[in-house]
Image: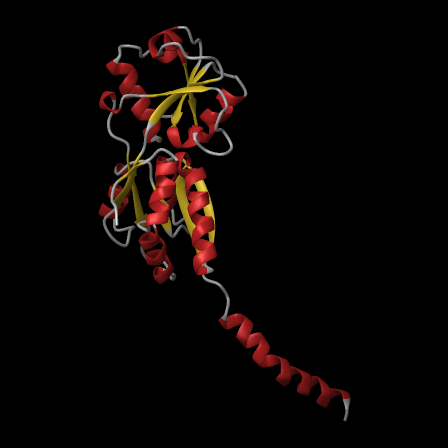
Amino acid sequence: MNIRFKIKLIFFILLPLFTQCTSNKKPNLTIAAASNFKFTIEEIIDLFEQETGIQVDLITGNSGKITSQIENKAPYDIFFSANTKYPDYLYQKGYTTAAPEIYAKGVLVIWSMQKIHSIDSIIENSDKIALANPKNAPYGQAAIDFLQHESLCKRSKFIFAESILQVNQYVLNQAVKLGFTSKSAVLSDKLKGKGYWIEIDSSKHQAIEQAMVGIANRKNKKEINTFLAFMKRPEVLQILQKYGYIIAYSD
């Protein structure tokens, strides 16, 4: 048996194995999520991957920036926004598979490494207050709504962060005395028990209705629909509640 024949024989023996590996390649999803949702969606993704075997990549940022990226053909399959405004805009422009659906209502809190005796006093006595940029981040706009409602809006004291995650870093590092962040952040395993926080009365700012939507013209439409449906599972709703979200639906 010559060497060339041996090589051909080995090739034909291994070919089915190569084909099998290719055909069993796991589908992949890329999810873009608002920063407030990072810790929550990571736990949901872990559960989803264990159950379905579908691998998920996660990108986080402020909702406005993610919207611009989708307009510029970023390869995202699903968008979890911190409001309905941006997903509605994408839907009207034809970038989504369907109309957005509200999956939860977010909760705004103030958070500090120092003990908070009252909301008014800590705001008035804080020389630097961090909040996500209201131009792109719904939680930042909710913070502005609240401050205006309470006549506490002094823009010279504000540090506008890129996202909720950056607000969290400013507060943790004590670069600011006070920050407006999400309840989901302060309840996360990473931040729970650190500092002091108070929930903001939701009647004093626009409701933070968080919406999800599938992105159009993606090849993995089946996997997109599978994940969106998974969001309504009882165990996922429990995760949402664990992180302080008000669930928008129930099974």
